[in-house]
Amino acid sequence: MTAADRFRPRTRSGVRSIPRRVLGTGRFASTGSRLILPPRVPSNGTLGLFAPSGPFPADRFEAGLARLAAMGFDIRIPPEIFLRQGYLAGPDPARIRVWADLSGQNGLDGLMAARGGYGALRILDQIPTRPLRDHPRLVIGFSDITALLLHLYRTLGLVTLHGPVVTSLAEADPLTLDHFYRLITGKKVFPLALDDAAVLVPGRAEGPLVGGNLTLIVHLAAARRLPNLDGSILFLEDVDEAPYRLDRHLTSLKLAGLLDRVRGVILGQFVRCGDPDQVTRLMTDFFQGFPGPVVLNFPIGHGERNLALPIGPRAALDTRAGTLDLLEPWLAE
Image (cartoon, rainbow, N blue to C red; front, side, top):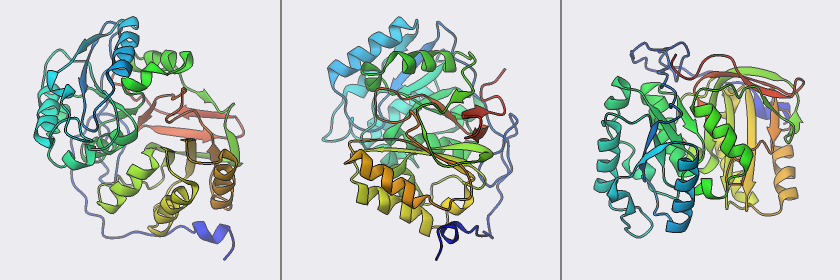
């Protein structure tokens, strides 16, 4: 089998069409329905914090809060997010209750996760989503929050934001902070330059921008909770995964036929994933022969630089121009 043979496109049949509310311009999943675009967060807006996954260290949480306050945002903090139950930020019913209360509250301009960790998958099918369908607002997070972001995109068509959690803001570099503030308040930040990314496969591709944590995407695929990736530009990152486990995750997606459906791949940072040179060799070898553009070391993930990316809008990845650009609005006018 040649390298190109590994990525032969496959057809898929039997996809059930479910009518959805028409709100926006883009399309999501397999339903043909249009995206729900959240409003921008005002420069003096209010963010509600939730913790659907693991408990968080107080010092990093306080440092992240200070950075949000310096940006001018008011913060609403439900007391239950400080609960702890082993590796979880409280029992499942408490984490569900916090989400339900925040998503239905008036006066909030966005919902931001306190931390990732593990736990979002446990409550995925129990959290209410109708409040965000009726009154969309921005949902922000990454890492384990990938499960929630992609769930909202898959079930509602809601554009969500793969971006910092509160605790990660503590170590975020100035570019990450500036990009985050400008993006959620509706300022122009695209196109993004690919200056620090290595081109593994050159080319240009257009499609919905979808992605997140590689491990969570594999788990969502196993649980049949992954959005349709047909024609997408897929972005991936991970942390604390040995190279052989990254290989296993990517191979699982390949064997499931999921990578055959995407048009381009953005590989972000793979932090504490072993020898960086070995990770580079793995990605170079794995994506050899991929029919669309592939870049590595794009600044998303668990490092100091984590540039927020919206999930859902159509985008263009162009290695010749050296840019990642959005082709349609991702926030409501």
